[in-house]
Image (cartoon, rainbow, N blue to C red; front, side, top):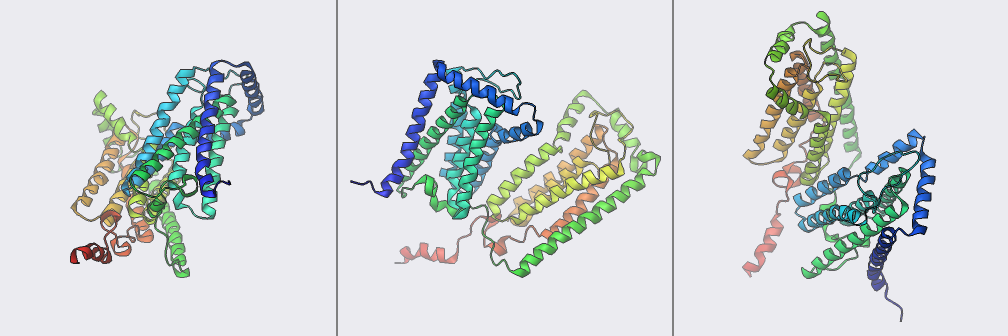
Length: 493
């Protein structure tokens, strides 16, 4: 008797997971026993691939960029960001699934490597070096688990062509990461195949466990590969609410706003460059305008080992890496809560505009650092303006603008504290370490004030607030009157 199509769809994932588990068990046994045919294939392939790539600098750079996408830092950043979004939207079961699945990969990788204890390939022309043992490939295992879990969670949000695109991109990325490990010469073919096999096995086990939890709670069973883990969560899995009434008039308004942002940036950068050139007239920029000479020397006289340590910590909070991390984290939270792109666009425009302005003005003015001993030698840019100060002010004041505009309640004004404290702390740290004059700091504050004002007026980041969305504080859904009537109806009867 022929098997019904529904049954075939149900059995297909089970068959795939079972085959993957069997393949991994077989590879584990053969690698552990040092089976000669497998060893011969692995070593021969590693040597040939190494000869193909060695000496091609551009190709190696591309391969390293691909392999970086499978690194633990990238994978856990994506899992963490997705978990934050799901938690803020109260999809607790999906949040737990992502965290448990990712945590399982963290445990499986070192345990299996320690169990097998296989050494990494030794090649004539090494390109990269891996840490720890070789079997299975941690990048192959981590990429298929993390990207696969994200695929199963967010699949309901994609429809039609976008679903096929999402599937193709996920499969291609996982395959490319595994192949990149072979091309870099840090893994054998059996290492990558083993990582993929155990990754599919673990991903299947967690997906089956998720389906079992749905069955226990009375939710309908689904086909995760076709519908995702929780199809009914689709509204909460979409990054933002769909744009409505995208008329020609609104499109033109967006175009005018973008043009206005560009014009404002050019005018502000031009004004700041002019100020910097005027300052450079006096003693090549090392005069005593507004204490440019006396204040840096006073800070040098106050230096102690303890203050040096804490000033470095404070200064690093305004460094590019820290600013980028905070910006990305804030954007993730903004999308999760407000369900609109406008606040994210505002913050992105502010921060990218600040970075471009800082690099442009610094290159044009070329002001030397204060004539004192510097605690951060060999800095890549000139003194005017302070990039740390401009970035910190734009970021934390921008966050305060967004929170105060979208939230309801007295607590939103607490975000004014970091908007004031962080720039002051960065200013003191940068002058203490001898890296900036007071006028460098003031110029950054002036830029931040003008740039934030211009982008706020043009982008209107708080326009999608309570009145437009019908949502409550911080974008959380507000119950409609019809919902209240439905709840109260049974009691009335």
